[in-house]
Image (cartoon, rainbow, N blue to C red):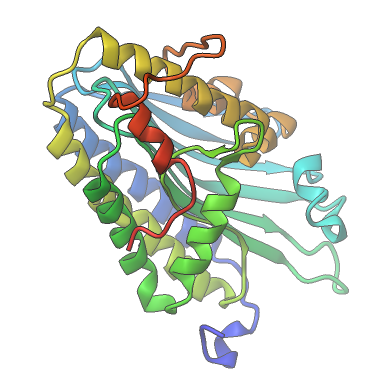
Length: 311
């Protein structure tokens, strides 16, 4: 186990503290990305008729980011949507609330990888004295390069490992494996990118322990991505690289629409469609039976789209 048994006792979720952290995390990440791009994010607050709302922060058409979306939401409902109740049938019929920060960055330069990160909390309150409040955290981050560099992958994974280390040495290999398995396109027989970490249904450390782990994951994002962005954003590129980027972005769309739990949960729970689909790239391409030329820079990506140990 990763903790003293005393820390495994359930504790009531501190909704206010989690809300405050997520709002602050969104603001810090947006500030750093505005500095990197030199453009301001648009702020789009919204309310959900069924309960709750959020703030979408969006940058489109910048010199560095073709699209960057950093989203906060805190929504509530009266009954779990199918994507959640299928996994936790004992909670069917319960009211619920979910909150968190999710981001996807689609850079303009094909040598800069696309990146995704989210940290979230889900709570299903007890309805009567015979029930206990259920909660779990989920989240992680993963990197999707178009022209891969081993040093970038090692840096990204090193930051992920170090963020999880204070909570137990087995968390990084465990969450890395979950990431490799989750971000996998079965119909393409390839991973979405070079992975990272992914976790869901995390409640084993009690609320305080799980919340601390989620904060460390959220706080690690800028350390994991910005050095790669700074290193690659001025690489020269042309039409060939942009065409390949658009082709590979098609794979990103396929995963998000077919497999992504967050997309399915958002749509099934009556979420705000504009915010849910902000994860999509602004442009993508599909080519019939296209394959890169052997030995070309584009062909090098294939060896990165399989689970492997980076550290």
